[in-house]
Length: 303
Figure 1 (cartoon, rainbow, N blue to C red):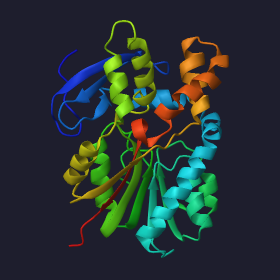
Figure 2: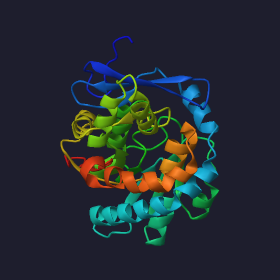
Figure 3: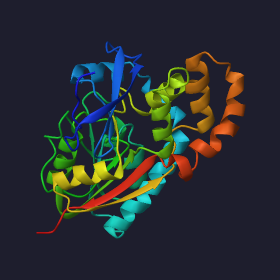
Figure 4: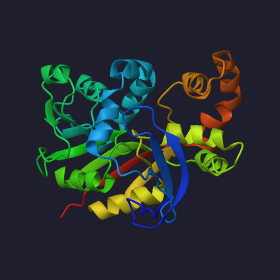
């Protein structure tokens, strides 16, 4: 593998493994880890068309139905944080970037927030949000969103999907009013991740490590952050400081994740899933080894 530079800090990166990609024309995904900030990321030079093609092959309706319970819990937690940031002022302007099926914006609307906006890539059916009076922006680079407009910008599991994360954070800084807050959830590298990355390099047991890493970093999840990578990216965008909290926040029920990724996709009997779930619960569903989500808050300085 040729030398790959970290997309956050610019330092040299170490090859972790190659995993197959089953959606779209890209057949293999090459994964690297930055030797400085620790970012784990896809090293392929993916085009927007290649990424868009993979997303176009997803069954979005099934995906959102599978994660509905976990996503609802995340939305409730995030709405409490937003309420703290706005001090309960329902007139504050809030923009949810990568609003997906609109579940979080609907949660905020039910709680009485009046000035809501969402951003998504073109092609998504967000007519329900429009019927609720929520302003929508649609483009690939956030250029349609006005500057210094919002009191709070939220990104719930979005920052891992973008090919140019530094550009995303710079745009968020631009769109915020002075004194406004950026609040986001994003996957972070865990102790268990590092264990599996070491395993991926072994000749016999390496498949287990590669299967795990494929679920964590792929054509959809282009990077997993570290605290250092988050701070470097936000400081470079103009945010003087940030708060990073880590916790275990699974997007899928653990039993389903094991049944699909570790049993069905690997040719193992699905009947093993309940046993494997019980064994792996302490490793995957607790903060001790798998605090897999970073909850980040940053503020644009008042000039």
